[in-house]
Length: 226
Ligand code: CA
Image (cartoon, rainbow, N blue to C red; front, side, top):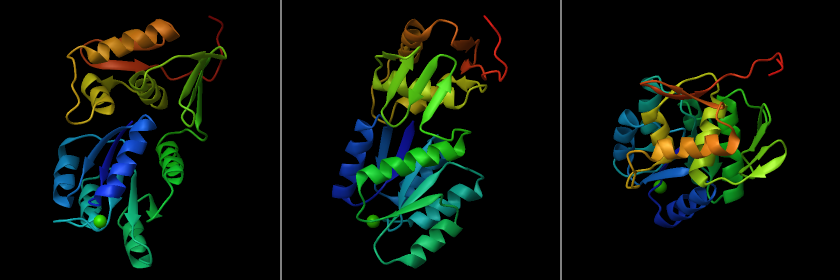
């Protein structure tokens, strides 16, 4: 899950950045509205945390710009205390949720999980797929009820593929989910993660779509016995 954090307050930004990384998110942090708007034109993010008061371009304008291009990426705006107008304008401009500063990090995590669910068909923090259960709150995966050890990136990759079962993801999209700017990426890093997931969860789970990328098949509603 790749998150863009746009916040010019160093202390707050640092806390959120570190906290989200510990929660298993890939986080890119920008402190400037115009840079954020530019990044959003070329990069894919799964979630955006957007401060309103930013240098060079306000968060509301960044948001308006994003929505005017038809992007539906979930956006949570951060507003200062007592600025009801900002919140209303933010929601009217296409924000999906907001938090008022100061806020509790646990509340931020819970809201981000809710936003992720809203954009998929998921209704709880647990994804059940065949004999696999992935818990986005505790960051655990079980196979037939047994806990499976997973690296942060393996978990993120599995989450992305399960959440969008039935959809083919290009290598590039998946790599963007796993790596932020400045992260060292081996050219075959993605293949290594896929390989590890197959080893842990079975070789049939993730399909390779030749020349494009990877997918997990949509779970059929009727159970067939194979
Ligand atoms: Ca600010």
